[in-house]
Amino acid sequence: MGFFNKIFSKKEDCQPSMQDNEGSYAENIDGISLLDKHEKGLLDDKSFLCSYGKVKVFYSTPFGDHNDGSSRLFALPAPDNTAYLPVFTSVERTKEFYNKAGRLGFLIMEDSFTSFLETTKKINEGKTPVKFGAVIDPGYYGVTINANALDVAIEMTKQA
Image 1 (cartoon, rainbow, N blue to C red):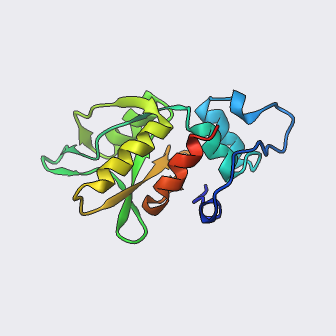
Image 2: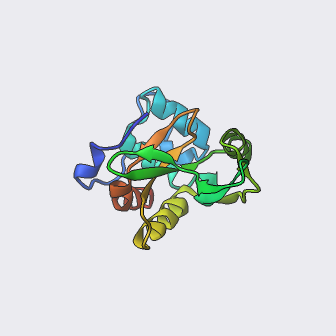
C-alpha cells in the first residue's frame, strides 16, 4: 500500500527502478503484475505510476442506488474531508466491490488509469462537497492517491 507522498514533493522524470531482472517496467502494462511488484517493493511509487497510467481500469459513477432504497455516495473515506473513488483491474473486482457495498444497477466504465485520474480531477473542479482521490483495487491492494496529489499523479502517468 502506498500513499505516494514522497514523490509528490518534487517533479522527476520516470526511470526504471525495478530491483529484479525481469526487464523494463514500461513493457509491462498488466495492472495486477504492476501492483504485485509494487507491493513486494520491486517497483517504487514513481515507476509504478509511470507504468500504471496505461493500464486499462474499470470504475463506476460516484453516486448510485443502494439496496435499502436510498441513493448514496459510493466512495471510501480519506483524510481531510475527502474520499477515494475506487478503480479496479477487472470487471469482476468491480462487480464484487459494488455488490458487497449493496449498490444496485451500476454502470461499469473502462478507460486508462490516466483518463480515470483526469475524470476524477474534473469532478473535483465542480461544486462538489467532497473532493476525490483514487484507490486501486480496494480489498486487494488499496494503493491510494489523495485528492490533493491528483495533478502530480496525472503528470507522472503521462511521462512513460
